[in-house]
Image (cartoon, rainbow, N blue to C red):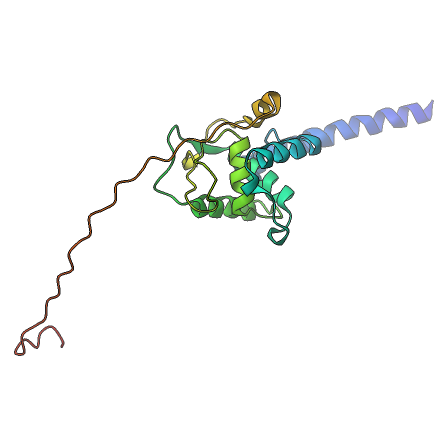
Length: 197
């Protein structure tokens, strides 16, 4: 009978510790010291997502020299869960800006592996972010991301798994070329010493 009592005591203590752990985790998240929990894919789902995006866009096939693509893809997916999305492609900020933001986020939360461009674009595609065609990757890549974070996390990757295909790219809008400014060369007269010549 004593062993049954001991088991009951231990189970009660475990429940207390789990409750305390949840409270501390909530405080760390509120203080910005831990990332908000996210609905992330299992290992099997992760492999399927990578397979779908690489099949649709062979330019995003992982390169050996780029390190652990799988880990980078998962890190990017986690970051993108809370990234603010836009209905339009973002022409103002380069892909490298958002990759830098993801890497800064990983460092802030001590998440190993970081993120590189190829994994970031692949994760963006599978997480439902609008994207330009990747035919010339890494050039001409625009994503439907905005500055700041989203108030609600997105698990759009579920719809990619359900449909078995990635969303289609959004065509780039042809930008008007700026007119070439005429170069105007001004030379000070020989008597003008104020220009420092």
